[in-house]
Length: 358
Ligand code: KDG
Image (tube, rainbow, N blue to C red; front, side):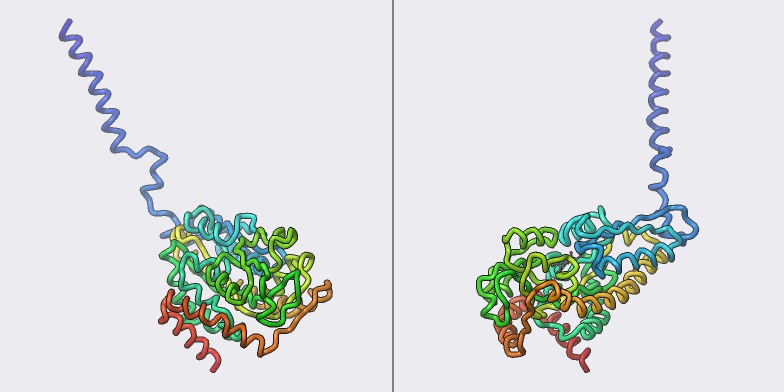
C-alpha cells in the first residue's frame, strides 16, 4: 500500500518537473519573434511584410505650408517605401502642442513632430541660440547655416534626448500683433500682455522690452486673444493670416524680431527600428519636403501681409532706428544666454552667419 502511494507520488512529481523544465527550454509561440532581430534591421523594405506607421502631428492648421510640407513628406515616404511605411498626418494640435508631442516622441508613443526651435530649447538648451532676437539677417542665410555644418552639429545633440532631427523646415520671421495699439518703437511694447512660446529666453526678451509676456501653448492662443487674456502675440504673417488671428487682433508690425526654424523630429526609438534603407528614405523625404515647405512658406509670408491689411488690420513699419534700439535693449539677455549655453557654440553660430553672407 505504502509502495503504491510512493510510486503515485513519484509519478506526480515527474509530470510536474517535466512541465516546468520543458516550459523553460521551449519558448512559447508568442515570444518567438522577440528572439529574432526586428525584420526591418536586416531586410530591405520590399522583402518584409511588416508595415510601419508614422503618426506625424503639428500645431498649425491644414492650410499652413507646414501641413502641406507634411503631406509631401507622406507622399514621398509611402511611394519610396512601397507602402511599407505609412504616414498619418495630424494638424491643429490634434495630437498635442509642441512640448507634449516632443515628449511623446521621447516616449515612443508618437513618431514625428515639427516644432519651432524655442520649445526644443527646453530639452536641449543650446537650441536657445537660434532664438536670439535679430540673429539671422535673412532666410537665405538661415538656410546656409542650418543646412551646413553648424546646423548638423545641433541635430547631433538630439539623440541624447531620444530624438532624431532629420531636417530644418521654416516657421519664419516673427512679427508682432496686438489689439491695443500700433507698435512702432520699443516704448510701444510697454505693458502689452504678449503670449510667447514656452521658452525662458523669449520671456526675458519681451520683459526687457517692457512687455508683460505669458508663455502659452499655441493651441490655446486664439481663445486667449479672443477672451482678452492676452493683448497680442508674435508669429510669421502666414500663421497670423491662416490661423485667422486678424479676427481677434487689430495691429501688426514688421518687428521681424526672431527667425524661427522648425526642426523635423522623429522618435529615436522608431528611427532605430527602421532598416538602414528606410532610415535613408525618411531622411531624404524630410529634406525634400522641407525644400518645398520653405518655398511655400516664403510665398505665403510675402503675400499675407497685404491680406492682413485687406482684412482690416493696421500695419506699422518698424524703422531701422527703432529696430536698432530694440537690438540694444535685448542684448543683455543674449549675453546671459550665451554664457548659459556656452559661448563656444554661440560663436560658431555667429561665425557661420558671417560666412554665409560672404
Ligand atoms: O506646428 C508648429 C507650431 O506648433 C508652433 O511651433 C507654432 O510658432 C509657433 C508658436 O507660436 O507656437
